[in-house]
Amino acid sequence: MASAPLLAQHGEAAALKGRTYFVRTFGCQMNLHDAERVSGLLDSCGCLPVSTPEEADLVVFMTCCVREKADTRLYGQVSSMVSAPEPPCGRRVVAIGGCIAQRDGERIRESMPNVDVVFGTSAIASLPAMAAQAFSADAGGLAVDTIEQGRGFATDLPSRRELSYHAWVPIMTGCNNFCTYCIVPYVRGRERSRGMEDVLSECERLVSDGVREICLLGQNVNSYGRDLYGDTRFAELLRRVGQTGVDRIRFTSSHPKDLSHETILAMAETPAVCDQLHLAVQSGSTRILKAMNRRYGRDDYLSLVDDVRAVMPGIALSTDIIVGFPGEGEQDFEDTLSLVREVGFASAFTFKYSRRAGTPAAGIADDTPESVIDDRYERLADLVQDLSRAHNELSRGRLVEVLVEGRSRKEDMLVGHSTQNQTVHFPCPTDMAWEDLVGKLVCVRVGEVRSWYLRGEMEGEPR
Ligand code: SF4
Image (cartoon, rainbow, N blue to C red; front, side):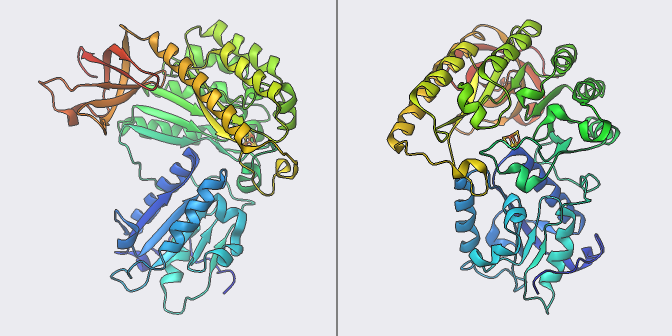
């Protein structure tokens, strides 16, 4: 069976009822959210979640192909399922979803012969049908659904949130930008926005369920609505999500070329929008930005930062930076360092360039020695660490509002994030149970400052 005909969208629940499942996720927030939809959908079919793949009848891998490492980890983990003991039902079904599924489709069988089901980025709703078919006695082939055209958002699917107080809300998917190093437009397709009323009614539902923080998700949130309404509506969306009564709003990802003044004003004028903006710069060299097809130059980025800071002077800015893009010379890298210094980022995700087959940049020859790229990466990491420390110093002695997430892994402390997205640790007051504070907003007086976290004492009452 090369490609399975799909059964009715939800009628296969009976065939899956009582089966155990496990979902493993690789990659970005969009993937994490897709995994929540997969779990919600399987729950609604009567499947039971288990905590290890070995216990599961159905193992779902939600894949990412943005970085090579995620690809390699996936192959290792899927292959290891071959030697895992059979589950109690006697047959294990392995399903691959997400970007690698979309990219490779039927070719997945060549590298991972134990895979039964492949569902692409727009085909989450097809998973129960294909899994039910794979469990049936006459199954034996590979079921594939990577159809993208004509499919919008799977917003009518249930979702099982990992956290009671936080929710991802997808507002758009796909990307029209075609940065030369990026595979996303090829695997997630063109930009498709979700209707504003649909987004808002999900946000209202979440707020009435007790969610305190919503993160609006999309590959390029600043161009939200252009495909639906003819112009971008992200500023309006931010203001209207703010009116739902949610305590905190975050969003990701923002492309600098699409961040409008209107959106900057909406951020400043919507109290729930966190005091933080992630704005991926990728390089400080106009020459390299051009080669990346980012469609802004160094000066454009710096003047955008000036605009943001003119309206929100204390905002915490974070970014993504790629080191070692093909053709990056020492001067280009120095330009990156100087831009990073000039902006004074509060934090940055730094990556060594990772060649992705099928992207234009993969064809650019480059003989920069690995040791040079390693050295640049270290220099940048040192600078980012110093800047993070300097940014965190500004919080010393101050009260910061923290959304409590739970107990810290390393110490007997509670941990959460400030509106500027700083990790904050503090001891649980002796007259309170730590479980009662999870999902609450508390004020913490910062006493100790590190590059990657703050530590302090809680003051006042939680809310
Ligand atoms: S904006 Fe560029 S980096 Fe971001 S998803 Fe689109 S193509 Fe990829």
